[in-house]
Image 1 (cartoon, helix red, strand yellow):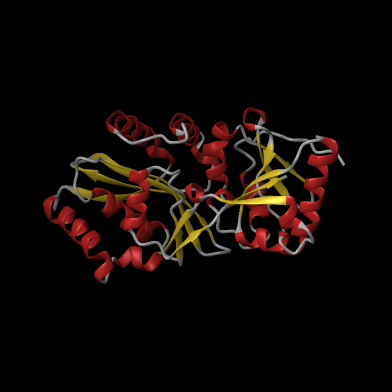
Image 2: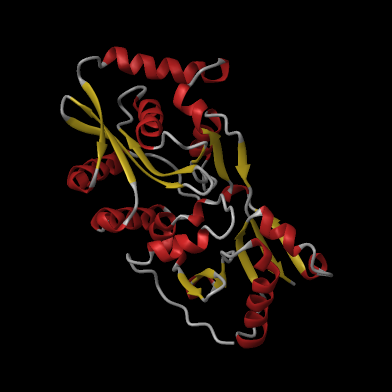
Length: 304
């Protein structure tokens, strides 16, 4: 068996999502926008056949696969093919990244699997998953501070702010705001990922019409001061928030767009995946403050 690996193009979205829908997958990496944003960082390639699609981390990082997207009943067959290719064709031990719990549970039924592979639970890669209705309403004691921040913003900027649903015609002003936001940011970069993320985000901007995204923004006195970009997976009723930026000098603005984006763009979402924190302490604190209902755990497996 031979595998031909390709780079993603902007027209691969529908194909990619058809494989992501083969079983319930809740990882942020199951959304094409996520893969496209991060493809420079991971030097991503992909392979697909009639059964599965698999993203592969490029040569710069060792050329190893991420979890294949396939039907649940095909997991063991697909894993056997991938393992055989890495061991027998590439002559390399198999390292597989970003494996979800369902995939790992299936692998553990293979006799001797846990003797042959080390399993690494990667906290920095956990996705934060929230109850969508709780984030829309911000009701109850645990969201009291968040609700106060939203109410304070509304009161302080009454008559001056407007939430708008955005589309590709707004990309120029989104990009201009994003560049200004970059100048004022101040946060750690544990995995040296920021530059690659920014390149990926600008690729999304430049090719807006090719992505099935939702966008929203907040204007104050007619000027864009916050925006968010997300996608929706109807098979699992999950909104994925890929990008969210706001003017940090406007109190409550992040809280406001967080809430309004869900209300306006994802009214049918039952859950919300706000992706991982990459081990960044400030980002982790912020994501935890919204009280995730659970984490989407990700594992790496290393053949000994």
